[in-house]
Length: 222
Ligand SMILES: *Cc1c(COP(=O)(O)O)cnc(C)c1O
Image 1 (spheres, protein in one colour):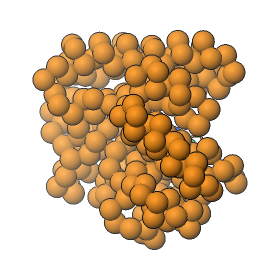
Image 2 (cartoon, protein in one colour):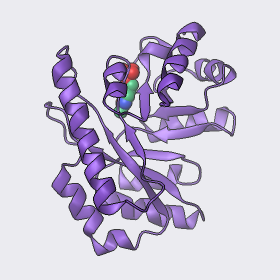
Image 3 (cartoon, protein in one colour):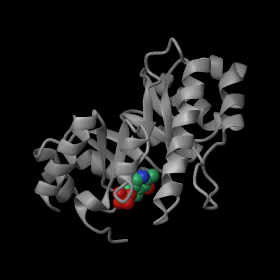
Image 4 (cartoon, rainbow, N blue to C red):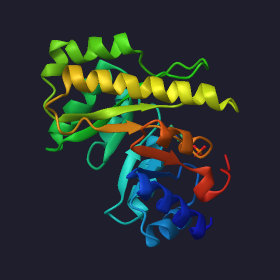
């Protein structure tokens, strides 16, 4: 890991008012602690077990984001402390998050994950599915989840035009949802898009939150 790289990325993001999620999945706690010492506070993990382990070994003021798919039966493990759940893709999951947020007497920030890539993946909503969730009377009753915006991943490709199109699609969805449903909601503000290989494109397309792993920490060991 290279602290200079971190400083460079931070400066770049600061110029655009974009926040950084340091994606620490598979990385050892020592590397996370080093980045913490350099000032980073938001870290992202994609597995519940790994997130809970690391949380117990690292400083309490870290804001942990779960960025991977979450099964409903695992919500209870992270509900006491998670700062944001980025990959919400069903009403059922939102209901479960709300239940455990309530039990822990807190609010849990969530992002709706959209499927914007051309690649086949099981995860992520389309616009119609998201609207169905938001218009549902069940959704209206969820008092302890805060829907803070949208999240998406572009196709893993060298075609920058395609990546840009996909990010612009997410930005458009965000804007539609904001103006139609969240106009008077101060929390609905985040567009989480951009990773190591495409975060500059994401920033140009309106990202507010980038999720960067390998460019900060080096390659992952699985
Ligand atoms: C791993 C991961 C990232 C970071 O990927 P890098 O290419 O290492 O920057 C971002 N978002 C999600 C959802 C991930 O799973």
